[in-house]
Figure 1: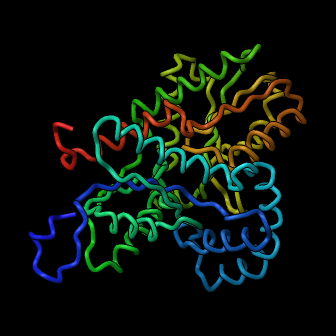
Figure 2 (figure 1 turned 180 degrees about the horizontal axis):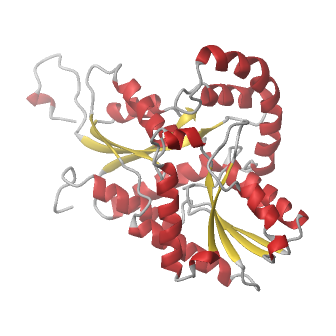
Length: 348
């Protein structure tokens, strides 16, 4: 706080000026029951950045069909990977651990920062955490959407939500947004290091490494979304960092939804076709996910494994996301310190 004698009588307390870093991830339901999943899906699938369909057409489909059927299916998937010890989704747990770990490490380096986390959909909300930072004296905030590859459906909507919260504030903090970082050297090396470490623990060598990224409707790409290019760039740089031949790393897209065409190749189709081509041993990594979640743990590590083995594959392994590992925290630290340049004291 500022010394009270420096303020006129009756003036409210003014917190010490601080800098905040807000990590923003996609979102998670609060529980695995039908209504918790339904609330989460309703918010997520009502976002016009995610579903670019006329609301007059989409909302009846969403409310009458999808939100009647999908919560039960999604709830089963979440129950497969739910953290029983902490009673939360893996995404929530890892995002919290990333914020705590990053804050502690930056403090060790001498940076007095407020590091927190929020979800674009669900809890804790972005608006809630920005207000909490303001109360703690953060007059400058770095928003860090946790997506290495940019898409309007992820990065843009996270920042949209933050800007909507700021629009309601009388005294706004200064804001910076973190750009995508598909070619960040620390990130690429962390991915390559995770591949090397994981494979060292196996008694077999994979024929191919599949880089599985979340899918996106092709028309979004045609409209100018750079996501596909960013994914291809990351996969190429990972291959180079591993010093592997290009054919040993294959890029594909998972989590297709609906009937329209999405970015290809589709991961499920690819893994089913590999055994017939003589590829019997596969490793999968999900470079687009900073934290493990239902899409990586249930859809890939469980579902994709089943698809591959049923098609005649022999060996399958999933390489976990960076999560709150030392390598993962190093990536977050490198990006944060770069984006805070000019805000942090030079001597810190």
